[in-house]
Picture 1: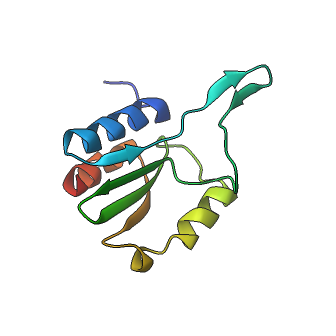
Picture 2: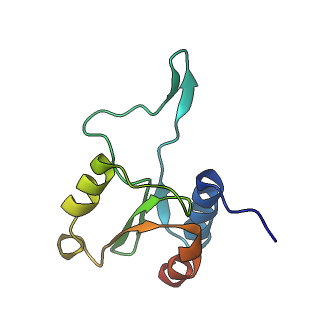
Length: 106
């Protein structure tokens, strides 16, 4: 039996999936500082982990492990990014068990 996929492994898998299929991908990585792990953000916290764009389509993906919880500030962003307002948009929380859904999108 294989070990569950971590959020970090799932993020790397998702980035590679979209890039292999010709999508432009954006992901902000945290870095270790003297005050611990930080992600440089200006503006409101909670923006989705991945933004992928290809031929007028956009995907906003909040990536979580199978047990990972969506924080309130993340849900606020997901609720504010209405798929009806984004060209062919997809806005969702994805987990490793959702890999077939992501493969179908890519």
